[in-house]
Length: 308
Image (cartoon, rainbow, N blue to C red; front, side, top):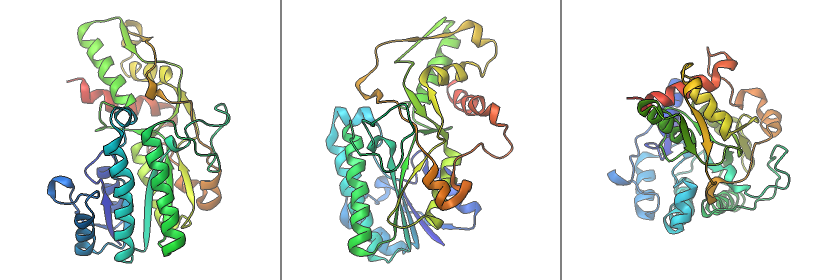
């Protein structure tokens, strides 16, 4: 199976490349905007697809930081919407057998009841330009499926993290502050609100779900991908601090006013994935790791990035 991954040089891309390669897929090198493959440039996108002739496409490429989308929504809207339109059209032109369109839990935005898990039939009420751009991209996938018979499977991914993630995102940002506090001897670690709840997975488990959904998901359908378990930002911070047992007595998180892009509490309901694929597609602990050590394992690998 010849695989093209847009956004292959981003955070998730290298993990997905490794996973696909381990399963015998031929992952073609499309490059990125710096090497001539720019999904927002229609001619560049079409030329790359025509040259590589992929069997299947994982569309990861996006501007994905919520805060950046507030600061200037134009690049986010152009890449996430126009870029997705170009990828879908190029996929149809080369008769791709399957396209996995990666969306986000930010599409849900203001949920009806934040105390219950979010299902795929929850109304989409995005609160950020980024969330709105992913809703639009998702519906371009719906249109491509119904109007052009392009076999698009859509995903709404909840939060995920791991080594290599940008410090703009919550876990690496917390890890950076904890490592800095460890070096400086500070007793308090200042961060945003500690109460928001996030459904957070290991990126290595998320790419497993992506490949399973691409190969066995139902075209035209949408699937949440996440653990289905909520953790507060405060609990995540405590798990990172607990990587170093002694640090628990030296540091404590202190909240400051939350930013606009903090977002609502959100965790997802896994039933549609179970109904379609069984438990195989659901992110779980990485092989060989006890479930109880999961937060510390993820935390340790991320903290080591900044504890240089």
